[in-house]
Each structure stands twice: as structure tokens, then as C-alpha cells.
Length: 367
Image 1: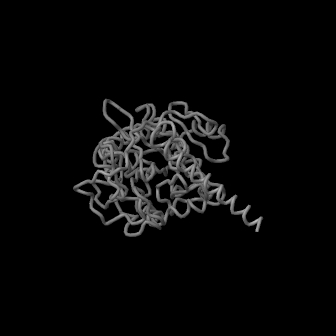
Image 2: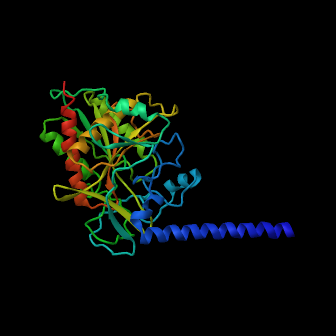
Image 3: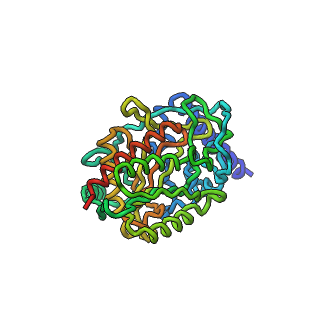
């Protein structure tokens, strides 16, 4: 009996301590968001740190729960519908015409340059966030090597723009509170990431670079299996268009909780642009992606162009163990444009800026 009481007492203490930590964490963020954001965002990105090492992104909900600190909890996120998350049921909801003003807040923010052992500065601007066992010195050296392809303006197309999570959507305009009844997904191409792809495509076309913008919806009616379906789309297009060198999968990030979401922006030419993050996958030996470092070279090339053209636009390249169909070419990247807290206008502007820098980056690779 004495042992049982002692054990029960320990359990009560653990429960009390856990509850206290949760309450303090929420209070800190509510009242000191600038200070405490590091407690629930790892460098302004979704916290992938507790994903399995061989994570492919297949069941990624693009949403990060501050209390999911175990692999088991993280794995469940893809099947749980959480407030303001990228829901597993994306549609076929039209973009709302009327909006509710809820209690949840939208916090404008700007992610600055980061310090620490995992962050690497690039020679011409921008950073890398190394979440792998690959030595920083190796990545520094590889970042200075040119991509493993050239661009031939006489051949067309050279670029494929597509979207694995096609229905990802955004805030309608700048405001202080968000509408929690909207799951930030819509099949309306003028209000989801397709609109960003259109902006990038326009810049490439204006510069005479051949491009295909595929607008296939891969995450509706089923969210799970999105990457498998988008892989089939990309393979088909590559087979029909063997001149394609670059494949960009355009997404949007999601940073926040049920009570607060972040809106990362930077002012460029007196106009707000959503900050951008490139993801370049790394193979740990289980992902069947032997040429990952070639994608990384292109990621570094584009990151430096973006950062030199528009200081502050980019967040660090996320270099981590994930695949995202980046085994299909040596110019395959995933680009997160803003978060669900950014507005349509902000991400549209970022799409334009990405397109302009991409043109320059590709022109540097012309034969």
C-alpha cells in the first residue's frame, strides 16, 4: 500500500509539472512572441527534427504542433485535423467570400540571420541550415560548385513548375485575427499556390526561358499519397519533355498554433513580400537519392541569387533527410513561399521576385 501511494504521488507530480510547463509556454508566447517563438519554431521553419530519419514527406501535413515532441506524436499529425492546420481534407471548399474574425492572432514577423553550429553562411548571401551528419565544410565546398546542368535557350522547355500540395492557401488580406473555420486549403487556383506558380512562370516566359506550369491537384480528394501522385505527374512530363532540367515544387509553409500563426514578411522596394525557404533533401542511405548533392548545388546557386537580389527574402535552405521526389532530376527543389499566415498579395509578390531571380540564376547556366 505504501509503495502504491508513493507511486501515485510521483505520477501526480509529473502531471502537475507537465501542466505547468504547458501553461508557461503558452503564456510566454502569448505575451512575448518575439522572445518565445524559438520555443516552438526551430529557426522559423516547421520542426522536422522529430521526424523519422528516412522521412519522405509523404504524410507531411505541413503543420507543426508545439507539443509533438516524439516521433509517435509527430507521425499522428498527418491524420489529425488541428485548428488552422493544413487539414487532411482540403476541399472542395471554395475560397471564402465572407470572413469571421476569431480570437486567434496573426503575428507579423521577419526571420533574421541565424547563428549556431548548424547554420552556414553562403559566399554571395543567404544561409544553409544543416540538419544532417554531412560536415559543414563539405557543404561549404559543394555550395561553391555550379549545378550539374546547363540551360539551352534554343531547347524548350527547360523548367517545370508544379505543386504536390496544390490546394495550399493563404490569408485574404492583412488583419490581426484569423478565421479558424477556414482550413487554409482551396481548389481555387487563383487563391492557392498555383497563383504563385503563375507568377514564376510569367517571369520565365518573359525572359524567353521555356517552362511548363502543371496545375494538377495532387492533394484532393485525398491528402495522403500526394507525393506518390505528383511523382507520377513529374515522370510523365519529363518523359514527354526530356529537355527539362529544373523541377520546382511550390508550396507554402505553416507556422503556428491553434491560437497564433506567424506571418513572415520582409519589405522589398517598399512592398511586403512573404519570406521564402528552399528545401534540399539529403539521402541517409535509405531514400534512393544518390545525386542529392547535385540538387544541393542548385539550391545554393538559387539561394545566393535570391539573397543578393533581395536581401532578407530567404530563410536558410533546409538541408535535411527527406526526399520530396528530388530523385527525379538534379535540379529538383521544394520551395516554401510564405506560410498560411501570409496574404495573397504578399505571396504573389514573392512569386514575382522568385521568378526574376530564377531567370538570372538560369541565365548564368546558359550554354
